[in-house]
Amino acid sequence: MRSSSAKGSINHRGHFQNGDIQGIEVHVKDAARFDGGWAFFDVQGNVPAAKLPMTAACYACHRDHAAVGTTFVQFYPTLLPIARQHATLSASYLKDEADLAKTVH
Image (cartoon, rainbow, N blue to C red; front, side, top):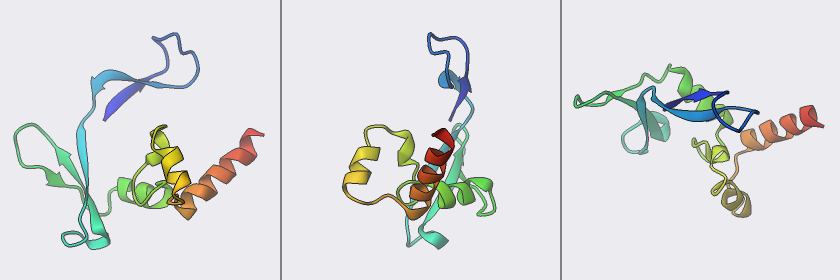
């Protein structure tokens, strides 16, 4: 994960990633190993990665807002149209998208 900035670019709207690495987390999908079929791990240097507890906020956020499965495909402009074409977008993402459209117009 990288931190974000709002100033420092010709882009004066929104945020963009800067070079500061905040941490490394890995999203592992494996139904045989994890309840619910997936888990997050925190990677810190050369020590074994630590599994984040299922109570961590990232699990609920991914479960409730991910576009495909438990992944945030909505933040990858190349992947989102493919997910839409293959009708793999989650109901929760489609609801979030519809709710956002109501506030923008």
